Image (cartoon, rainbow over all chains, first blue to last red; front, top):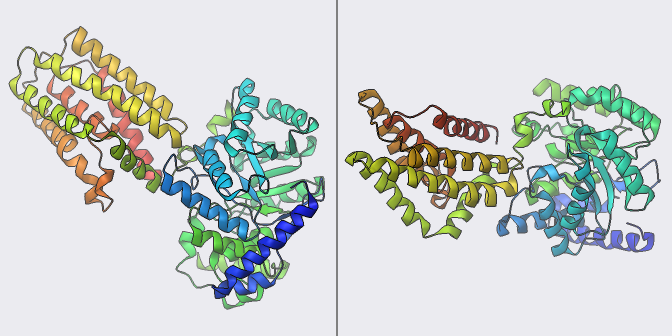
Amino acid sequence: MKDKITQSRRRFIQLLAFGAGGLFSPRFINASTSSLITKTIPSSNEKIPVIGLGSSRTFNVGNDPQALNNVAEVMRHFFSAGGTLIDSSPMYGSSQPAIGYGLGKLGKNRDVFSADKVWTWNTNLGPGQMEKSRNYWNVDTFDLMQVHNLVEWEVHLETLKEMKKQGEIRYIGITTSHGRQHDELAEIMKTQPLDFVQFSYNIIDREVEDKLLPLAKERGIATIINRPFQRGDLIYELEEKPLPSWAAQIGCENWPQFLLKFVVSHPGVTCAIPATSQVTHIKENMLACYGKLPDQTMRKRMIEYVEKII
Amino acid sequence: MDELASYHLSDFILFSQSTYFRLFELYNQVIWPLHILAIIFACLIVYALWKKSAWAGRFIAAILVLSWSWVAVAFLYQRFYQIHVVANVYALSFIVQALLILWYGIIKNKLTVFSKSNVRIKAGSVLLILSLCVYPLIALISGRSWQQFEMFALAPDPTALATIAVLIFYKLPLVLYIIPVLWLLISAITLSVM
């Protein structure tokens, strides 16, 4: 991510590969002819694609060689479609070694935008845990290191600030996936020099639109959105329901694309990180990185439609 | 530690059902032919319960100590811990249970007073049949690969269930029930939220 020329060349090759894939799959043709949707990280002006890859649950496969190869295959399709940001945590069992396996197999250790977390109540163990995570990923440095679920954030955040100063990480952030931590998170966002913040947001759970998303925009903090499908519940609820015909106006061919485009079209959202262990699903998810994003009127229409049928 | 209270149980079950069951499949492949020994163990327990001889209690306790210790190390710690961040705690609790059985069953020789209650004997027999004969077939019955079977002495659920069956046959301190019952509860909740 540091060499802009190499990065552009890689992006060109990725788009070519994505376009070539489209020759064999009609649903990819529209996507490959439009440009990758990116958003800017306010603290650096670096652009990242609006769809990243989560690894909670889906990449936690232990030492199963068959499942590890499947993880690598999911990652291959993610990178081919232009994706860069992968997010993990020491809390996710064997997800970090699985990502390391995939990166090694695909030779992508230097291309990935690596986002991980520190998650320990014993603050002395923080630096060692992050080093262990780095070894699992087999990357030189992490791009983004976040404090997971606000755990001992006061101490961990100081460590991250120091690591950023030393050039050991490029960005720092903090995460939550619990609604009841939002007030505390807002206070941290107001007072701490964060590059990123991560929380849950989807077409049904829109509480963060009132406070956290406007605050992130005001403070110049990039946002990563977890659980854009409500941990799969939304897909489960909607998969049998008809996609509205007007979804085609924003290039949506399936529900995952519809739900992801809703999330990433919010002006305060930088990137969403749906997790999957299936190649079919990553292909569907990555389509949300292409074509049009809904405007304010369309977003309202999307909410009304989903609330009516769910 | 306030943050810990904000977690739900499902926040810690960060693996899929298919990954969990596949763990048994890979485990069974690696430990074969220990299954033959496990079948011998199961038969010996049934024989010892039927004989009710002076040595039976210590003999059953020894088999249970070996089983709980094996499951703690070979399954919970070496395999389940790869995908579940709290499985090391489970492994430790299985070791504690092995030590409790060692203390009460072998050192104190408490597995001597056989229950005369028909209800207890019937309940113990049903649980024993479930754990030794039915449990290994559950994978197949539920439409999964037969290779994902779980056997007494090798997998945690049938081992805990068989232990409760043995405890019901004998009059033993209640402390011996705590870990097996808790484990079965945890296992049931885990299976339901996966």
